[in-house]
Amino acid sequence: MSTKILGIDIGSFQICAVIAQHDENGIKIIGIGTEKTQGIRKGVITNIEQAAKSIKNALIEAQRVAGTRYEKVIVSISGAYTKSVDSSGVVNIPNHEIGIKEIERAMQMADHTADIPHEYEKLHVLPYNFKVDGQEHIEDPIGMNGSRLEVQTHIVTVQKSSISNLRKAVNLAGVQLDNIVLSGYASAIATLTKDEKELGAALVDMGGATCNLVVHSGNSIRYNEFLPVGSANITNDLSMALHTPLPKAEEIKLGYGALINKSVDLIELPILGDETKSHEVSLDIISNVIYARAEETLMVLAKMLEDSGYKDSIGAGIILTGGMTKLEGIRDLASAIFDKMPVRIAKPKEMDGLFEILRDPANSCAIGLCLYGAGNFSPYEIDSEKKMRYQGEIASKPKANFRNVFVEEENIQNFGQEVQDPNEKEDSFSDKDFELEIANKSKNKEELANIADISKQEKKPNAFAKFWYSITQLF
Image (cartoon, rainbow, N blue to C red; front, top):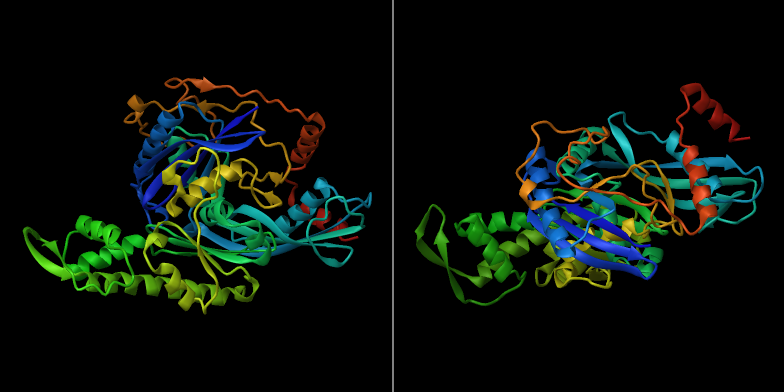
């Protein structure tokens, strides 16, 4: 049984929608659509309807290429909205054997005891260290015997208002999402090798309007940070320094995007404000402008890494991805700024059906979202929907009432006047679009039953019950 996965990278510069088919043979890319972003600035949604229209346009193109509908939707969220905390949890093991339920109990304990600001909610709960009866550095405690399990977790939180706006924009585009994933996390999934994850690496996704820094160590994210600067800033710098219109500055960046160019050749540029006139500029001056912005951006990122305290934990060095990494010479500059650490320019991992455009570092996040939907994530995780996920679980567990909307091109202008709450189960789109029913089948009924048991534990206790639960788990 195959599953069609839709990954939507909601960037500040471009929306990229990718449809992948996942089955027992692996994952295959079958469709892609891109659209220039409207209504999002430096990772923040500024106009929900414009953002929704951009998402819908990208989705229409992806579905036209794929020629099929999708069954699972994974959407990215910018690091601009997030804060992170570390938390630990301890539980007793009554039967002295550690299974998925025991790991989930420990992770939920860490979740409950975390100090989260009131205006934030949890996006990812990611364990990075386990202890069994006090023994540290347990890579995977599953199947081990013990009486006490402790877990240390990195918890990524997101502003409630921001994630609500994201859900509304996606919902208004005719999409019912299944998961929201931190964009830097998705890029790490698409680019980091197994060795880099084990040795520790700092992934820097350098996009059009933002940069996201993620430190991956011990098979999990340990740190994430956000910088509201990207390659669009280079375009602005070129426009101002060369007194030329922004479209021409963007063309110059793409055509002559090198950090070092000693050529004295001249190119003719229109003058800003009076494009009937032109002037000549040397390629050396252009490269100096590009170099200055790239250097400043990398220096800020290096300072972030230094301040994180994880610089000594990244034996594999720096992994650069994103559209800005296509600037000629940026790897050497990054190596110099990051104290001669190893630096690699990363493209998305190879997979069947990978369109040539998706080999571009700019699309690492979109590919990572599809991989996440196919089960390629941290060994254990509590996701954005508060569900326990683990590697080896059933790849596709669609909801019984899940309905997917196939977006029709002629409906692109038919946005409602009001934004529908994504938690409301109304039929605003089903009247116009045909529905997709998904059979909830599994070859492994015992595993499905086990997962069902886990989901039953998600009832939220009252304040006294939470307190009593915390006390009893310590003894």
